[in-house]
Amino acid sequence: MIKDPRHIALNVLLFWHKASHPLDKSLESYSEEISFLSKNDRSLCNALIFGVLRQRESIDWVIQSFSNISFEKIDIKPLYLLRIALFQIIYMDRIPIFAAINTTINIAKKLSDKKTAGYINAVLRNAAENFSKVPLPDAQDNAEKFISVKFSMPLWLSKKWIRAFGFEPACSLCRQINTIPQITLRTNTLKIERQSLAKKLSLNAKNIQLTDYATQGISFTNPSLPIQEFEEFKLGLFQIQDEAAQIITQLLAPRPGEKILDACAGLGGKTGHIAQLMENKGILIAADIEPQKLESLFLDSKRLGIDIIQTKPINLLKTSIKNFDFYFDRVLMDAPCTGLGVMRRNPDTKWKRSKNDIARLSAKQKKMLNAAANLVKPGGILVYAVCSCEKEENEEVIYRFLDKRKDFLIDKDFKSDNYSILMTHKGFLKTYPDANNMDGFFAVRLKRKSKTR
Image 1 (cartoon, rainbow, N blue to C red):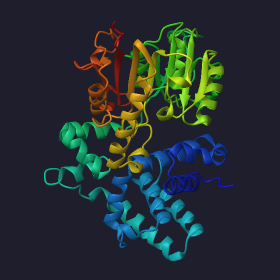
Image 2 (tube, one colour):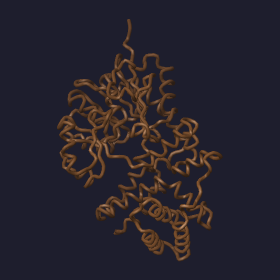
Image 3 (cartoon, rainbow, N blue to C red):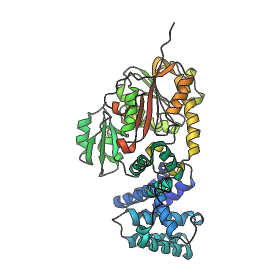
Image 4 (cartoon, one colour):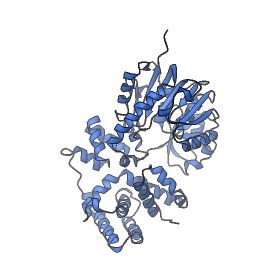
């Protein structure tokens, strides 16, 4: 079994590059190898994987400056070896340059021929001495390319964000996306109060802070052990969940005894929060198209001490009220989206998405929202949410829906004291990584009109 963190990082990145699934699936495939590493090596392995994906475009700009082979002709394996080594050289102060180069060359010799190892050696030694002299694209003549290289973003996305937000705001957003976010969790109020949990967590984490907008959130940094090994986690005292995601459930505002549907439940972060606000009383159905996610959700609900959740594997687009025995008081539709609002946590997203994905998913979101709306009782609430800041997945979906569904309106009368500053005058909830130090989310609370005689 491989016990070198750099070699494992290479394998994870190559596996991810060749597959269509997200990074967490690649990490899962190599979880056994990673678990056998020492704590420091495990940290290094994860830092290399996430760091390379965060800074890939910036690193590639350096590679192109020192490679005698055109970038398009570099084979994938030596390319990722170069990326891993250069991430250490450029971004990791604690690793000596000679160590980053030598360990990379040793791996290259095991995996390729002398010529390839020699090429990697030449690029790294030249880059190590001169990378700081590589000029960035000119910000005035080519703003899109400047942002792409400076903040390691796909060119199509830097162009889009300059048009949407302007040059300086786009720079601010991209800069924040490349930072490592704090860990945020949601207190399980069925078992403990937030202040009491914060005190317990202080024994194994630093910089404990209560979230400003989410009423049960706690953030921290530098955990002394993996989160799943916290005694508080094992006891079901919390779920990992970003502050923005917690606010979505607050916008839904579930009540004890109601009938509620989480229509795209996934792994159930918001489902658990809904159950908490329902005080574990009522009917809560967690639906998703992937049965394995619902299995994980159900197991986690037991850890949290929740017993009102019923799981239902369904395709929402092929579902009607006939699949249920009743209409719902509230429906949450956290729709499948590009995930461009959570790139701080999932840096692989920016290299797997394209502008075509935005249009494709927007079309799907419109259909799913209409299907979810059919399950809401008259006078009931429907919350639409996506972890994306793109207008095609946000306002455009809602306006198209409201044009067709005259039986719904935006519920602007709902009181949101804790997070009212995050609401627009049109009733949209919007969060951004740079402005709010949380994931980028969009949500809106819709109300189905009561039937009139």
